[in-house]
Image (cartoon, rainbow, N blue to C red; front, side, top):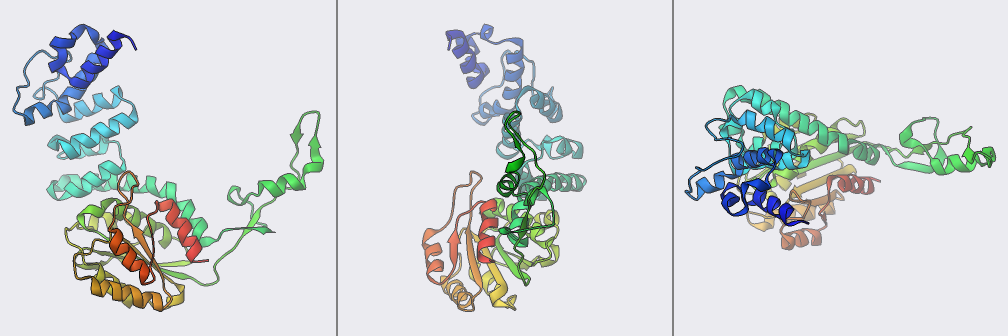
Length: 375
């Protein structure tokens, strides 16, 4: 890296106060646009330290002259999508730029992603009524994106895995058996063109459950669990659309709320969630016991960080009773935004000792886990 390129990069990192030291000439016209866009947001660090925002600015973007929407559109064009999404999240979460939350048109212009959805859910109580429908639209787009990525995993898990020992008349790309197809058509191989002509494609059948399953999702909605709540709402919506599953959705903090009637609508579930601070897992699991009617065809999945705010006795006793009744009892440990497990390992071990199978899994691996326990 040349000395000029190193100076350019440090100038963009350190901001305009490094201009006298590094020199303005290291920045091109495009760089000055980048610098102005970054300074509009990250220059607020100087405000927080009671430093003046005066001085020359290459792009001329003083806060009084630039509306948040104009800044947002300019930033969207200047940076790659991944960088833009991070800057957007900082604007809302770290710097709380109110202009981005007071106008529905502004909200609808934001790039929908999970970071934005989380921020809007956390801040929706501070928004005016005119922006709520815009919030709903943003949440819906994020939910649809997550559903697209997860749906097929859960369909495969619940409606049946491929049976490689039985062929199916149902022909779809999902069931295509490439190994059997190659084997059945080897005689059509042309060595001159090095091509295999497919005369008889083969497709796998699927192993289907004989009876429906009851899946009870018991989800911790305390303040630290928003990532898990979001995925749980989507999973409940996917499972509700499948004929082989009856879904109950129970959310809890220190109170228990049964949202089973909304399980098919993850957007409404997320807009209904009231993130709290306390946790009474035992009370929630005791409520789930009341929902069990066919223990041997029931899965109770507790989604939590296992940080119990109440006395642990009722929680441990409830887990023991469910396991003894032969309910498939799963404990899904909370994951942070980087998919790292965040949970009370001591409590998780105590629950495991009483018959709960505990794991820290991504949603895709949770679908595979369901397939195993419902086999």
